[in-house]
Length: 418
Image (cartoon, rainbow, N blue to C red):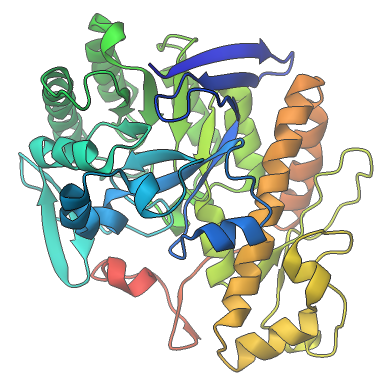
């Protein structure tokens, strides 16, 4: 049975954890803090080109909103989703929604949570969700919850979401216990409630009644995904996460999803969060940008965190995206060539950005683990924070539609962001 063990805790905060005894991968051990790979172009080739070692220190994130349509073929095959994607060596993680896609508020049914597929709205019940977990066979997964809340969400909406999520949690526990496939699976309880400590506490208290029923915690319902996570008020975020974590068993896995900026991610790691997805990589890539922020504490140069490769100033720039980067995009291609690809709408342009940005973010997480192990997380946090403070107000992640910057609109659905 899969286990999570805290190996060490640094003086500044943050911890090194181990995920081991995974049923599919009994001989593998995965270190946290760890990155959950989340991207529409999910393939073994993209991962390998981005420098990922498929059996080491990362997991594949599979939001139900992305993979629901695969349920029937997988049910017929009888194999899990890791086999389907030829990624048997990698951990797989399932949650409800894609953290990089803005989820507009919608009318809610009391017995389900909505997701969107093309122009179709699908209402997912706990029974349907757990059936999908039986079919997908992920190595770990979150419970179904209503996370449709945000900073200024009405208290009544938050209370309803919290009550529904507590009920869904209880149903999920019972469904897991009665399932021959899931009874020994690694289930992560979802904690929602917006920025309302009282509502979050009620869910935590429910989970703590029988702590053996849940193997970890997913702190959700703080934003509606997409750009909102990148723009979130850091002080309020730290306060609500800190108060939530204080009520949870220290020894269990803790997960958050969303496009948090690297300096915010480091603050959350210092508080005890173990897993994050790569939503930010998707937003940065969609904005035609390359990540270039410096995380080398031995050479603490301060760089502007991103460069916009669609900017005409790069059309004659024959340097790599980032000097010294070992990714395929930087070794084989230039800023000028990528500017040309993006200007002419060639698909290779976004793919090169994906390869570079994923590689850069993977290296960032490897550096985080090293910094925690050597008690240098504080120095790393200061280096990253200085770069993002200087960039404050200059970074935004609007999805470009028809090549024109466009604000997210409440009536847009998932198809517009994929």
